[in-house]
Image (cartoon, rainbow, N blue to C red; front, top):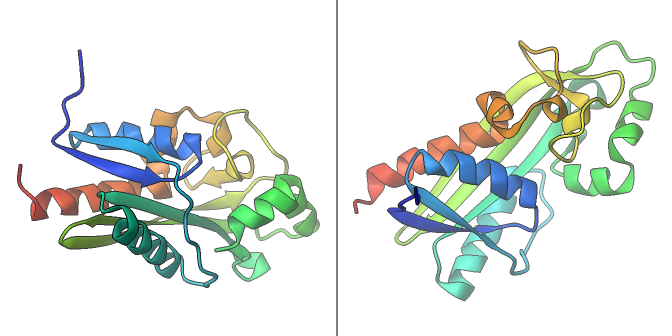
Length: 192
């Protein structure tokens, strides 16, 4: 059975895992997600919303297509919020094992993931946030997901995100929360 779409959004990302997660959520809203590989203009900022807004608006102004941009960060309390908006860079440079080395001997493992979604669907710009609280594990666990998923355990769970399939992760996920809120708002603003 073919999924019917009332709307199509072009998701500006090179991360196939994010596309799978967001597409799964979007199905519930009859929104199709198409991956957009064009280069993303990214500014340096401590504010995820500012980073995502800048990328989305610039992409829309250049290509004139309805666009979705998502930016996320892992904020670790005992590391004063590090790596935060620099999570992608930190993952590429020191990875999950580097974070665990930074946390050796630290008992406070409290952390949260935050996601910001920006949709530009003319004439609207929608910005929504989602957060999931949890803790950093003592060692990487699981083979699913991506990024810091093997070391993040959401509150109320014993498993890391990397030990969950997409549907399980989306029950907790910061990204799922932000995307759901953004799509709900989009559907209240535009009518088929």
